[in-house]
Length: 79
Image 1 (tube, one colour):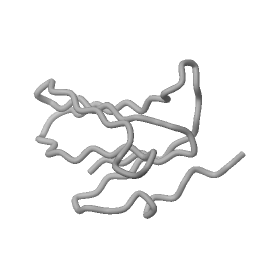
Image 2: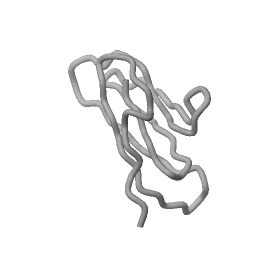
Image 3: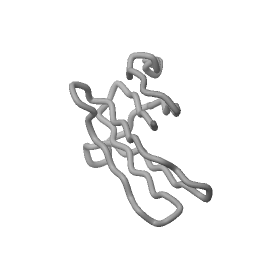
Image 4: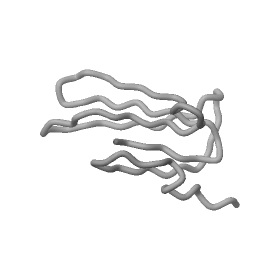
């Protein structure tokens, strides 16, 4: 699992070593994106995007081998 958490609306894009691309915007019932996939050996690329054009927001990334809730990853501090 790869999870993004933010006070803003972010999305995740992952490119696996074989070139396939996975995307997620909102996990069911939340604004937090999550991608559940296998990641074979090799270079995996990860992008975090903000939905609004020109938008900027702080975010946190989490990685796990087991299912988890977005609330287990704290939100970034507010400025």
